[in-house]
Length: 141
Ligand SMILES: [Zn+2]
Ligand SMILES: [Zn+2]
Image (cartoon, rainbow, N blue to C red; front, side, top):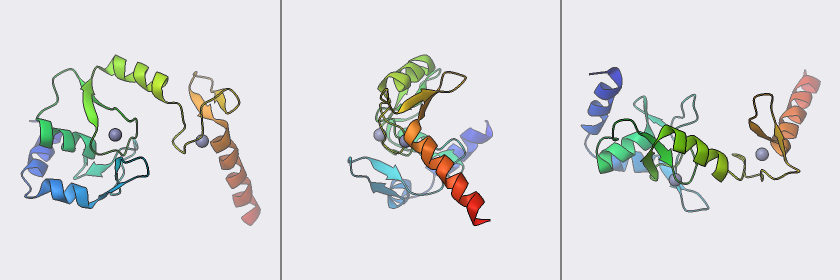
């Protein structure tokens, strides 16, 4: 067994796991249940070192079919409940097509979007805000 599977089994063996997870999640304004606990480096929620949407999926639906990854239908990384198995390629394509807003809700439209050197999309509003923050930080020193 891999460490991941061991941790997963340990977590699944906890009594009232569903309630414990729900206690750390809150509905957002769109009606999605978002994780409010620890967040890992990839931006996904973590519980006992396991990504919470995986834990939630396995808890309710059983193991993720081999060769598939869990994808969020809503594309919110912290959404607890709506991850479904998908192929990696389909997931990436879908992400690119369906993400119409940056993580802070600014639209990826012509005026607000620029591409980086690797072809990734970036939000101009957020980029400007970050730049401003950096300036303020410099000024404060
Ligand atoms: Zn969702
Ligand atoms: Zn933005």
